[in-house]
Length: 278
Image (cartoon, rainbow, N blue to C red; front, side, top):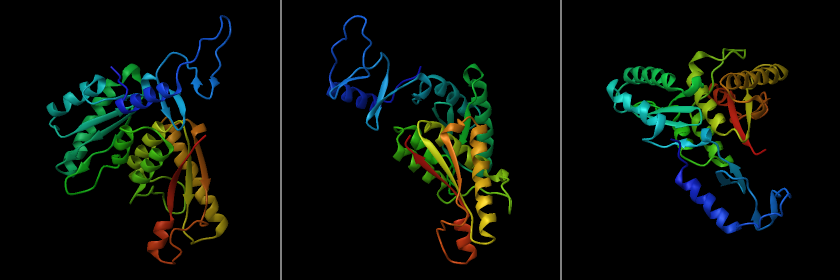
């Protein structure tokens, strides 16, 4: 059973109460979408009030809260598999495995088992994106850590931008030297980015490609565009609608650090994500 987050429901109810009810239109007259500044006519259904507007809520966009429905069924098997510390956060078609593993080896085994369990529970053969949100005790944090927070929050421009920034903090999408082929080591990072883009589907996501200052200006501009295009293609291949994505190559025109050092070059070679209201 899917349930709406109580915070979102409270906001929706408060907004409806503040706006007040509208008088029913005469028979045969189609209701207006907005009868007055204080009166909004909505079709029967469930809504969230966000960014100054009512947004229809579908079953797929509701968060599966802990202990209910598919999430409970999948999580119940983790302990039996030997991973009692592993949890699951499921929203829309994005499943983020959570928890703190005692070691990198335990994390790898748990993630593989979690992927298999989720694939076996996907309703109607529906594709589920599995994201790594598992941290290692005393070691690396899960790349999907910010996605977990987004799954528990309202979907706004600000919350989506924070999720992208948190996901990319201290990380970068790796490409082969001098070309736009994405390194396999970046797959889990890209999956986390895909998860954020999926949950933030009501917005446009700009993918900005940047290079360092070495090499010819025109080569760097072309390379940055090709790399941004490659990231867009990856997200699209994982189910993010292409109309939600915009790839722009900035070349070497927007450096973070203008110094001519290897450290500066590494900072400037990056992919950034910007959330844009439609």
